[in-house]
Image 1: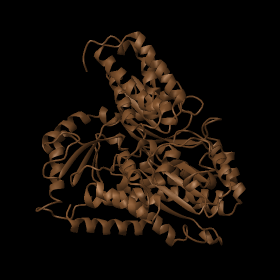
Image 2 (image 1 turned 90 degrees about the vertical axis):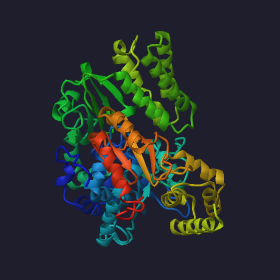
Image 3 (image 1 turned 45 degrees about the vertical axis):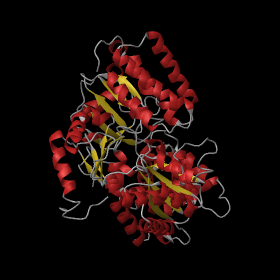
Image 4 (image 1 turned 30 degrees about the horizontal axis):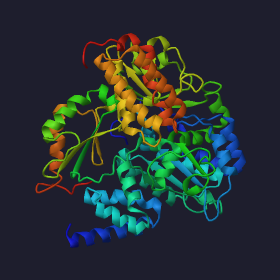
Length: 400
Length: 170
């Protein structure tokens, strides 16, 4: 259990019968499993939103290099500010996550699974090891899983060591291999050249759990929820200035204002969607829909009340990125430091409009030229706060 | 470092490499285990790990210095990590930070003279709905108030040293 109950709505995960997804999967061919996951248009729940079926299909088609094997990796390096849904899933629904990983292994032909758990969640490890052990005893991991001869798959836990960038899948693989968590060039993609150079599927914790629900309840059921391009339910981690912070399950496509009403965040000044790397929406845009086609998120929703200083918010985000940039590429390493200095100048009331325009130009360079998603998305919050709250941030006379 | 201590550390590292496997991917798990028992990853330890895994010591240093939870500097028995990220910031981490400095008698980034406590900032601990959040070794405290800080420190003291009621978990 998580230390305090963060769950604010029932989850679909509560009502899906344990092992029902795996049972269905074991009765299907590999192509049919992937077909079902593709048919429901499930997109990755970690934030990037890559179609899960496409990813599995590529990994299933990829050839194993001599002497190796395929891998299924669960990305539990949940580090995006304002995101904590994976902690709740791992605390309450670990069995379902491991069941989803086993289905992925069956679909792509993998034999080894790895849960990459962020070191900040080390206290979850003993109970997770216990869940794995019980699954082994019940022949849900190990050899001849579910009585199917030759279906061998086991999962072990690998602890992270405190690096936000390792949530990026190629950085995560570098870390698994014992290197600094510096993202790789892509292509080649992990589905072809991943852990130890072998085909590897890396999915978010929540994605694996949804796969179980989809196989148990059919792709048709999942597709009937959400919007055309953003199917299904999504877990949202809600924090900040609202009455009931916690984890909520809503269908994708919900408007920001509907969400605020449900969490007790009415009257908010702004909402940050997608964490530090996401976008800051002012009240005038609360009619927008949380979905891949409008404003997307890996689950992080941070509510800012009417008296919050948006420049202080921007500063907190930039301090985060200066700390967490891996330093490998120049736009991200130097750009985030420059943006933080810019925010500090704004706080002192010493930033000219000309210089602010130059900073926005720098943001564009970072978005275009950074090597990975961290640098490409780190200016988002700054850009949206400057855009929507210009009258609040210019010409300051008070030092904060 | 005394020769006896060096020998013991060498033996320990040899045992860890045997346990995790003599391959590059064992590097971070081995370093994490060393840090648990030694509270630091010394130059000597990094050299031994490099020899055991057959890689250059600069590679070991590169990895050790990259990750926030691995450190070459000596740390206290209890490492206090206060979340500095946005949601904990909104819920009042600044006052908790001040009180931690007051009650521990050290600033952020420092270790107490008796080697018991270190105080650090952490990036998002994933407790955003229950901030301010504080991680002490493996234990997480949520909705921490300035007045609770003293009791948390006392709890650590009672699990380590002459007045220990149980073995410290690190």
